[in-house]
Length: 370
Image 1 (cartoon, one colour):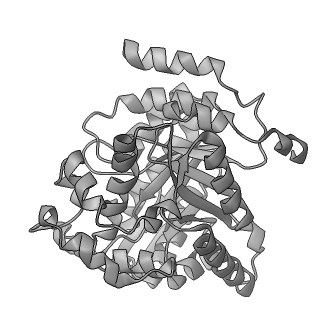
Image 2: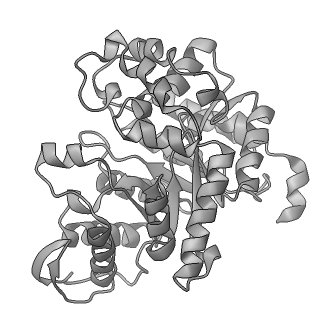
């Protein structure tokens, strides 16, 4: 940790800690949100997240600088209570035995604090990298294979998830299998989460109303599968930008929105869930900065270019689906998400070492609840 990072973390000692802040609404945070070239600041961010009393530290895995296995191990050694979550990784990006080995090694290092977020991603990405696409059947079977391997069982399998004549982890720590959380937007994914997973990670830029509808789908699916609907944890991801300049807010919020809405089919799905007109996506995708861009815009464009593209988005698509303004205004939005059925909010866009004022503004009236 360099001097600047140490100073930033030390400054958080003046903010409310886990012992002094009410805990009726669990808050998680993201390390290294967005595009980064240096993974080392994540260590200070992990320390800051635990100091603030956050429940979970998430990492959006991205090949190059954000490998979940490496950073989960690092986080486990500088924290002692916060859960460490992949938000997200994928079944097919690692061999089943390697993914289970990664998870159980991290469980052993962290004393059982790992949460594994799993996503489907888009078919074009898997075609481009030469890996198989996901289907509902392959997801369910991969989930079962993972759990069995983590329990130390021998697995022989031939089906939608692949062909594995003989799989087994030679040794596993005496730790439980990590909870598996499915990242979902549409009704089929939400139903899959409710029927088979331990939780669901809802996408950024959902309005509270969209979160309510999504939570209802998950819990109804759990009930139909004979599961306790309360056993499926609802994580709502909320982009947060508080106390920022107009330019910084535009970069953090608008730029991130562009990175989602510009993706074909994915942008339509996100707009549809919120009940918005998908025809408005044309204004973003026709922007000159996106001409010839294939894949994620934020992997190609610079920050100021992303901000320019974001100006083509309807303002309500950002204002009604993110927490902006003063810390108290952010909490007003947080409580709307809680009332919509979220069990935990995952604060995104701002790193934990930037969230002291927001976390510290937790309404004191909530103290009586826990």
